[in-house]
Length: 583
Image (tube, rainbow, N blue to C red; front, side):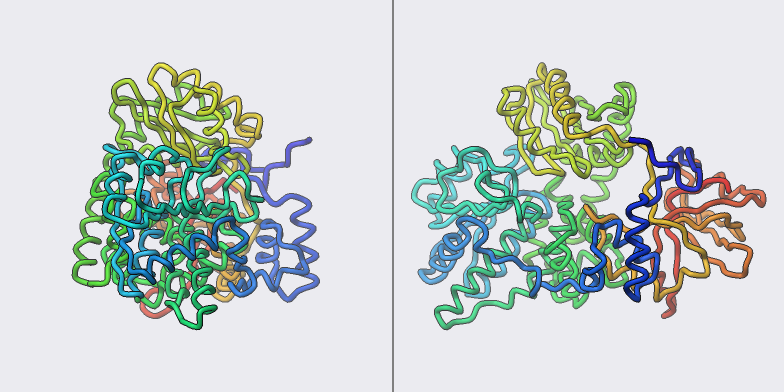
């Protein structure tokens, strides 16, 4: 197969990347779409790249839960799980929720706490400590919870927890999860998980909070069959949206509708925890999927990473605005501390990974005392830099605990599980895009070599480490607010559905100004009267800032994502500049 020619001939941009434009097939589909629909060409290019057929283009822009929400009973055990939750309500039983310590786990727990609260019941929340207890249910915790509760609901964990669930004698256990299942299921009353081995995979892209939501939808159906009414589940979608984006679930199918509707709910500012978190983060506009993934999500996660494990879940379920404010401020503080720890680990991991080579199918690093709460974020950074799956391991004593992130089309969770079954890992699991592992110190090298081999068979390492994917060309005069609003209808954008990225060719920089320590603000035009503003975050941390600020009248191709900037009640289009090349 011949390699696609570099877009605009850019083999090495200012940041060293090769520009890759739309394929011939994508261009052909976009042209057909533009001819057969009233949609503008840039939007057609984006839809074609997302694989939307011409006949479905206009419907795709209006995703509705009514059309896209699957029947919850497609998932095995869903009706059993819903019936057990309702039985706990009917008999006023004691309920415990065992949740993972990340955003998905916290959101899932808050969904159930809210749901039980509607019936006047208070559920016990238990979130394990990342360092002392590790991921998922453990025997001492489950035994203790079983002594004092009739029902334990494990959310975003539990599918592989055979021994801990067996230890919960005297209580029923229900598992609501999405992590890859093993050949056998734990001895729970119900395991609702679209990634069980005996599922068809049609709902494999759901995060745990979406699984919980579908179980509550089924519970609502059972309530209505009995002639009663339950809580309005639409109001719960802010939590489902947050978890879906923060857990990097692909924004395709029902996930798109869940996130879009959830963002509308969030904009109403009805949940005290999210209001407090938005205010602490100085979010002064209605949130987008970007804010869920990069502003709110990291703060919710901070408690589980380096602080109090249950703080994020408690904030999301909090009803008191004053308590919510205090928790949000604490999470914001922890997030700042997390950034400092992460920066140190990232520098050391990158140095080690570079020494090992960044062109292999797997990029990995392991270091003494690296905080287990940040290894996943550092793995994500390495993955983004190299376009390869990445594993980062923190060593402590004879063991290392690591976290991995994958690239589109490469199932990391399945490969990690294979390694565990082969005895190269003490334990490991996850899903396609993210996974965790525990490995003996003396087995790290052979384990990573075997993992690299498994990932290579899936195509890892074939893409250029520095490719920048572009949707096409745009002229400054075409970048109007109404076009960007139309483009946003193709969203929300995120994992599995990257936001459109366009190039403004042969442009002249009309002004440039450094903002803060490392950012750059520029104005540019095409010489025909039209001009745009652009912001480049972290420009002076790399070559973009010095080159563009000291342009000396040179002309550039400018690449990035378009956004609407709101200031003083007025809207304007702004380019979030990501790369540039001499014209």
